[in-house]
Image (cartoon, rainbow, N blue to C red; front, side, top):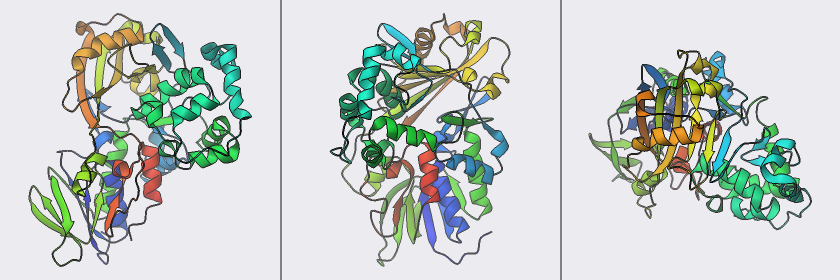
Length: 432
């Protein structure tokens, strides 16, 4: 156990960002208590049992950029479990049109705009229009530029609508006009200015990732990583408690440190880490409340031999007006380790939905999956089904990750989205 020469910290939230913070603080010699409202740890990096399988209930992959998650896995002894997906492309389905995404791209930005697979989506005119990004001046692009306005101006409306919008809206659950460049990737606006456009900036960002695919997974599911981080945090001395809700954070009466109101009574600490959804962090800090957006994930195990051929590759990104679902992952086509666990003709598919809090969407899943995959599916084909609802974790701009002395924001509370961004931020964190 780490020596207790440091301060006392409370980490609020037991998702991956909170677990990483607890692990780091405990390893530095601080006394750490993590409080999670739910009965299980992991948050969006947790699991659910469906038809005898333990499957990811939230994130099922991580971006390879910077290789930070890979290094964390190796540090935790999971290096041999890191898995590559199949090379089959994802598809986009819009009203009246379905097409596979080009093989080379970064968040939908075509790295080779004149490649044959890009031309099949955009046509010769659209591909040539996208090349304008390579010659247009970039000096006037500000840090507050949105992806929507910039992509339309530099790559053309066709590329923005057919390539960037399906990918980024699928990943971040927001329209392009609501996504700032620096929110989806820190420093991206400066990269675009300095390198001479979106395409060159995207090429640079893609080259920083590990060789191979842009994403990786873990044999057994990404939730394996959350469990390993939790175990290592406890090994370092952190106390992880579930079923405890924090309802308030305020200065201690003495003026030194913080007093937390919890469902099990008050708790004092020298420092506090908020690792909760952004709207919860805002409420705890008594700031102007933000609208809470939610995402629902529906996981289905189906008997459908027609899916053996993976007719829509590894999955589908959906444009508005097609189905209630905004994306579908054919998980057993994407991950060979998962396919190896299934009998012939059985498959795992995941659908994601933008929902209002508490809205049920499982009734849409079979019809949506059949339409998106282009096969016949009925309720009788469903072997097991489960759903999980999560607060939206789209990237956001946060004025400060330390809004006041002794309070630190991590994960979605800090405006971060995705494992790669959260792990990279933890590696660079300073809780002084």
